[in-house]
Image (tube, rainbow, N blue to C red):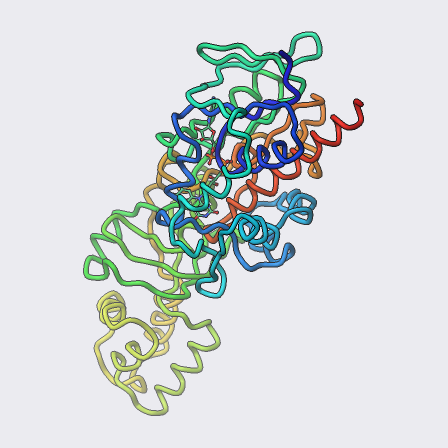
Length: 409
Ligand SMILES: Cc1cc2nc3c(=O)[nH]c(=O)nc-3n(C[C@H](O)[C@H](O)[C@H](O)COP(=O)(O)OP(=O)(O)OC[C@H]3O[C@@H](n4cnc5c(N)ncnc54)[C@H](O)[C@@H]3O)c2cc1C
């Protein structure tokens, strides 16, 4: 039997494609190596699954952290955050908005998201425990080999995910398949993860668990700047802004840069200077001033690090004034390493977008071969970006397959 399409991988990208193909009664198979679908999906968002967010397509794209982010424009325009919400609504799963940004299922269970994604798929098309080992092109068809079976198909969709959390099944196989077919790939590296710094537990020991809600993180010698939540931990730094900056920090470490700077207050430079001037006029004690602009424990630490005696703000020298500004806005932190790609929430890298048609996710030089989801060199921050990207690409690829089948008739 020759299939019209075979999808490799049963994560959100592959499941979305399978929904569309099932709806259009396409003769297809979905091959999943695990004995269950969506193992990674089940652990997302603290097992509650942050499915999407409330951004428009333009806002969505502007929040991404890679140069070729506009690649995602056509697929997100066809199927973006609002379409994700509607998709689940039609399957009786309402999503609720949290933090005025993230959508979670009303049930608070990622299993409801998986159930809704599987609901519309013809069950006879799903083959579990099917670990694809090889994709070859033979006489104009694709030959797919698993440990036990051999399938022939006119089209293949690679939806095997990245190399993040390999125990869920995402072991980076897509890159292996692509390389064997002569498709260029960018190796997976960590994104959206913590950074290790022995300096933090040694110097900022008492700050473990303390956070800054809008820190400014910079990588000296580069233009990289991130803003947002930062958390001091027993191993180094975490929090949304650090997770988001991790891929840039990893790249900087690769270039020999081993420090970052963080701000220890939410204030901008102008706001800080204004507050300092006002504290001077009011003859405030330094510690009182520091406590008014940052966490109490950070305030004490700043005083200790600057070795400025706790006198009145009026009495500090010009040099001490500058030292305070520098420590508060650009505290230098040596970084040892970024968490490994296997333990990162998301991976940077994947099948190169230069190989893909952004409208259809088809490999330009191999008709009938598609790549979708995190196996492609696109990724987003935490906040429902990645599942949206995966579903959106699955939707685009499946519709192109249907279009091709119709043209064949
Ligand atoms: C802890 C954690 C929390 C996260 N939370 C969120 C969140 O709340 N919101 C969000 O948007 N994103 C979140 N993400 C990211 C998100 O889970 C992924 O980006 C998304 O699952 C990618 O979807 P995918 O379908 O491309 O790949 P995956 O979900 O990785 O699915 C790939 C599938 O392919 C299968 N497979 C791999 N190789 C083969 C093979 N050779 N043969 C057959 N099958 C194969 C795998 O078993 C797997 O089931 C989180 C990630 C992690 C690790």
